[in-house]
Image (cartoon, rainbow, N blue to C red; front, top):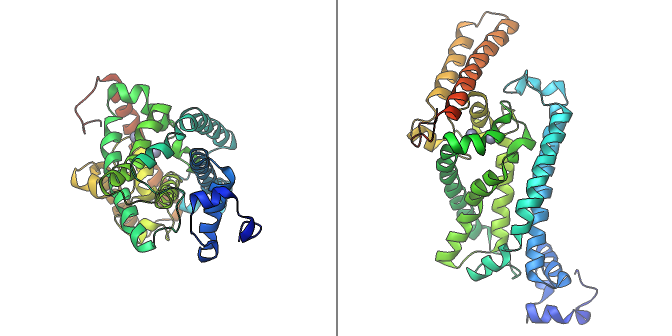
Length: 335
Ligand SMILES: [Zn+2]
Ligand SMILES: [Zn+2]
């Protein structure tokens, strides 16, 4: 029970939840009711909850990566082991991300509740949908966002859009967790649409969606984005278990090579459209070299891998300069 006692329930409770027995709700649902009733204004309650959720999950998920970056023990799993972000870089990145959260997201977030309501989304209502209802909806949002990002991200790699918008996100050729949302405000807006539009379109057609499902999706999407930028590939990383999951191993190459691997969560679109050719060639070279150098010292293998990385990065720097110099090129030919 979150209210003092059942007989002292505020009148707003009876207005918002007529006939609902608090005791029949789960702990989380009770907290939900308490949040909406104590704030007293659903637009404010949803806006505040959405903003706080984003801040807590984004920075909360980034903290373990900052700790890992500070511990040499983990270097053996770092994809570009020579490039460890400094504390100054992490702080610089945090400031830019916070600036965009407060100047772009915060003013817009108050529109979320009215838009959601207009489309028939459940917001303050309880009980929550079952996991059986939520899981397929969340998968659909992953699928939609991944394809949206695959297309929009390639567009951002063309001349004018790259030069004036996406170049900021490519400041780090070896990304780190916090750098996931290090981007021009216009990019945050464009690519963020892929996360928000899926649920809104789904709701428009079905009118069967609870905001708790949207929040669960956003939490998972934030984990995906931060982890993909972490710069680490562990034996237990998700893509080593689910081969079509992108993960850091996929996106780190995008930052290092400035090309290929445009999607977020899944590998299939890059594979189907051939925008992973350089990535696969690179992986094949590393694999072949490791096999051929079976008897070489660990040091020699490390040096060889570093040489390959330097080659890929040098090509990437050239490709970036060309992309900037060219005008808007045909879609998909940004490299
Ligand atoms: Zn990019
Ligand atoms: Zn990135």
